[in-house]
Length: 251
Ligand SMILES: C[S@@+](CC[C@H](N)C(=O)[O-])C[C@H]1O[C@@H](n2cnc3c(N)ncnc32)[C@H](O)[C@@H]1O
Image 1 (cartoon, helix red, strand yellow):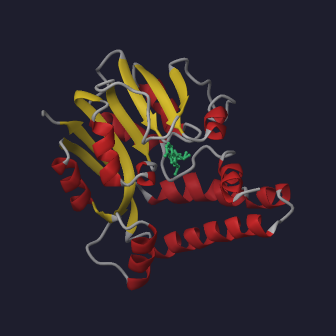
Image 2 (cartoon, rainbow, N blue to C red):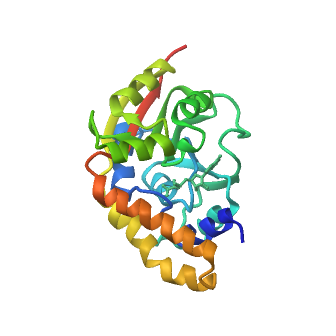
């Protein structure tokens, strides 16, 4: 089994494939100012198994298009894993975020929790803008430095793994540069990583290894996740996800 298939198998049984929380999606919705709007059309890009997709569909009068390039994650949106019936206003689409079959100005809002990094924050916010109606809302969570200075070890790690990591000020300036008006920001609390993402992941390690006969590849996948978790535990004061809300500004 190749590495991608192993990663999918490790993650698809969980509610989330990255740090986040229902309360934080709800906070982002409040900051977006969309609650009073009717008949919204929203795209949720890199939705995974759809934790935030369901919150969006339930909290807003919205038709949500859930987009992910992995069909196996989208399939899990159907099977009741989210703990409640999946609302009828979710449409699933297997597509890559850099090649989506949407028309310009198709959406009132575009959501992307912990996924835009796959094409890079700056390329992502530029690419997604065309799909937003004038004044439409962009909501993304993104790896962010929480302090101006960091210990050398964590600085070196993330600069290598994700060179676009930056402080919120830098990310917000990029949003302004690319035609958005920032309307909200908050850092995700540590519980979004520890309780909501890492704990279920760790609880699944033994079953994952058993499914794969403790192969060397499966053990390597678990080891790399344990390393990531240890890094977070040591350096959580310095980095995490920032949640950014911005409105598409005029041409
Ligand atoms: C860290 S997970 C976050 C998933 C979900 N939003 C969450 O917070 O639980 C990133 C997601 O982006 C998806 N993804 C990665 N590259 C993608 C691409 N080029 N186009 C669409 N989805 C992509 C992955 O399959 C995965 O579901």
